[in-house]
Amino acid sequence: MQMMTDHYNSIIIQIYLSLSIVSTITSSHHQSDSVCKTTDYKYDFTECDEFGGKWRVMVPNKPADFCTDRLTYVPTRIHNCYTSCEGGQFFNKSSLFCEDCQPGHYSLSGGIVFDNFKSFPDFLPDGFHVKTEYRGHENIATDLCSGWHVDNTTGSLIFRIDMKQANANSGCISVFTYTAKVVKPGRLRFTYHYKTPNNMPLSLLFTFNYRLYDGIGVIENDIDTNIKFPMTTMERKFETIELQLQAPGLYIFTWKSIVIKNFRNYFSVSNTINFDSYGNGPISFDDSPNQENPFQNMLSTIGIIRIERIIIEGVAYASECTPCEAGTYAPEAGMKECLLCPQNTAFNGSGSIRCSKCDPITEYAVIGSSYCSKRPVCGINDFFAVPKNACDPHTFKQEIEYRWIEPRICVDSNHVFPKENSLINCTLSDHTIDCDLGMEIKSESNGKFCQFCPEVDNVFEVTIIMK
Image 1 (cartoon, one colour):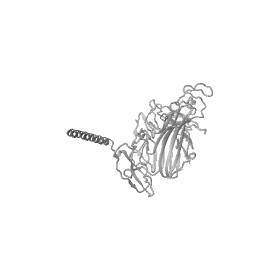
Image 2: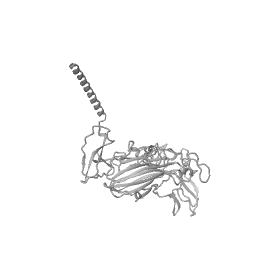
Image 3: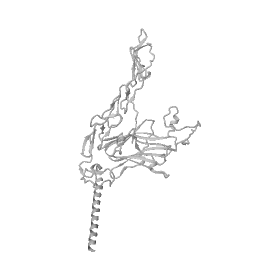
Image 4: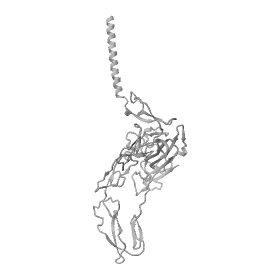
């Protein structure tokens, strides 16, 4: 009996040891698959302390418990709170030095520019956050609400909603915020496009506000003072809002889109047929431009907010350089700004170090183009006549020559451009003469001439200063 008991215990011990070995191997194999790597972490800085310095620490890129065997890291002491880099540089958190931006990128001195969010395919830049939720009275899930997202075509941050679709619910709110540490007087500028249907049961409200923290509490938190309601814009036009940042501190900027009931609509709207108040018959929805019937454009069902560019100045340093947007390039390292693609060159992408040449025969591009366009066939409106000399008092004839409108983009395949100058009848009277568009009359002793108007700068962008 004793021998059988000893044999049984021996078997139990062998089974226990075997299971322990398998468990150890399995556990070791599991840990090797999820062991933490340096790429799972990033450098960040603590707030400035009472000794005038801060610490560099390593923080995970993802939430906790995504890997095991956490890396051991000793924080690095930084003996000054704020580091300032020159324009064309960024502060490398690994080397703790200012380094030149790579070709195809740029940075401001103490400023950051966001004008191509498409260059961040996996996540928004540091400091940005998007949140969408439903705050209405109906039982509607948040995922049925539209939210801010990156437009893959333009790289802009965009909120777009069709008021006829199922996700157009009053009470849907989408917010994106940007947090920045301002260390010296600066400003925030953002360029936007905003339109909302005028005659729909629902409307799109766009607001912007900010809060300022000094490390202890909120300094500026007056909603009535800090909230702004950007104006709607014309079709394909952008406006710019500028905010002066006088006090240093932690700023939180908030852009909010809200789908609300439109209490100003004057028409009963359905998805099938609509009648105007004048009884002129049915008016159908039409999202495409219609020059012959502008009233139909008023019944567009699309609401849209597009943030094309955000610029903030007054920060300590740029932690990353900004890639050049489409139509621009940076040919060398350490550039403060990107250059516009020259005429008849283009680049449709971001981070370019050079622009591609268009086909000189079949294509053209204006300065700063993102793509080359096909050259059209020339017509009589692509050139103009210019008097070459004064009216001859003996023959009452005047020679005129022909010039192309510059920059010339058309192809004269139909040979419409006159090959030789012409003689026209003229008069010596002092009556007003006609000049082509872009020209003005100039009087001299031997007569009157048409000359080109002086060059002026065209301003297409409206800037609103927020106080």
